[in-house]
Length: 170
Image 1 (cartoon, rainbow, N blue to C red):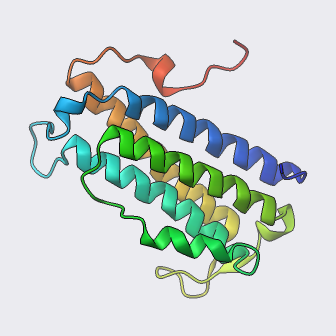
Image 2 (cartoon, helix red, strand yellow; image 1 turned 30 degrees about the horizontal axis):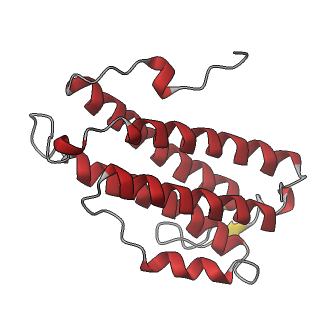
């Protein structure tokens, strides 16, 4: 069920777009390059980056659960799924699908009125708005999606802006 509230619907559409583009880039990762990393200190191997992308999506789910825990009690099962681990593209894509479905459910359980509610966080005990937390987690996903895009370019894979962005009006 789609959320009829315009702000939630718009935010969900943008998140879904980023999930789709992330999944598309993950599909472009060669299975035999999971241990590849750029040649600079502290760079993650590709497989670890894939596992971190899962954490980005889990963060969005955590915000939605915090905004409506009574309606999303089944989201607690997501805590059992590993994140920040070495992941293969197939596993990452399967898990992206799980998170995408939960994110859709989460947005169906909240309304525009919830976006301004404050939720306490580890970083801000007084709380930050649901909208701010969702946008922060979306930013986290977008940044690491771009990191994966850069990795693919550095590995010599054929990716372009069309792999990174959804072009409107086409």
